[in-house]
Length: 327
Figure 1 (cartoon, rainbow, N blue to C red):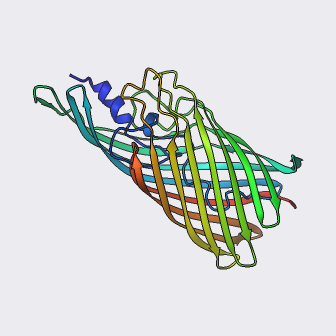
Figure 2: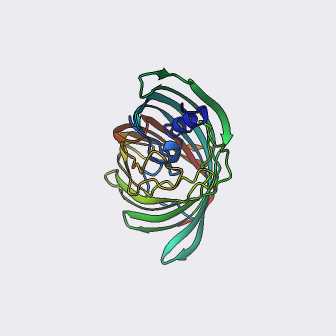
Figure 3: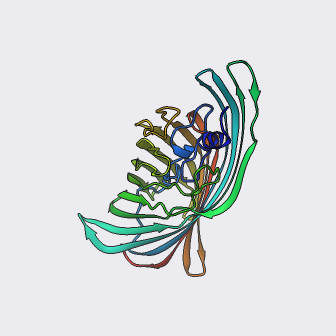
């Protein structure tokens, strides 16, 4: 008979986070916790644009709702079931852009301190070799916790209508994580991401085209001996600016694990996740007194999913300068 803690561990692999990722499927879940720390869809419209030197704050809000049906044959023991997950993350972000240049580009530093709410429920039905059925659970965890802080460095360039940058992010594993919990916000592992992004923006016709791509590298979780494979992500956007205040378009992301999960903790195999998300984006700029404020509303629907949860992704962000100078 499969013990309760094994079932909770299995159910955990079927859940999804916030930035992180963020995706869906029916089948066995790839990446530990079925998520990576890089939030798919976070870098679409204006991805390649680094603002002028100054200090900026951003209120980034992430929403996710998804589910997955699971069917496994574990050596004659059949496990079927499902997982439902609802997630909300608030990620206050600080960005400091220096007027000093390296290789002709401005240098910037960023820090993100996520806090999130997560509600995950899972159920399973186990059929033994003799046909006997065992139904443990259902299992459910829900809570609000601090996640892993993320720090990063950016170098950004501008030339005419072209804007591009390179960003490196580091996930610091000190957020809420307990082995076997379904509502973990932290990852309990170091992770690193490097992303390059380009934006072409023509103000005369009001057209923006942006693309960003990168890789996430994961260190093994020391408590589970599980190493999530290297992850590739591609994001894009096309936006028509109807005025200085309003822009409307579409955006999307593609995710593919290029390296399978490994380590002694990956007992169910070396799985690779995949997903494609696409949806609308609306950008709205306004003045709060003398302070310029930029807002963005994004929605994505998961498509073409493998080994991940399937659902809906949303972002609402608000960005404003604390201080800013000329580029």
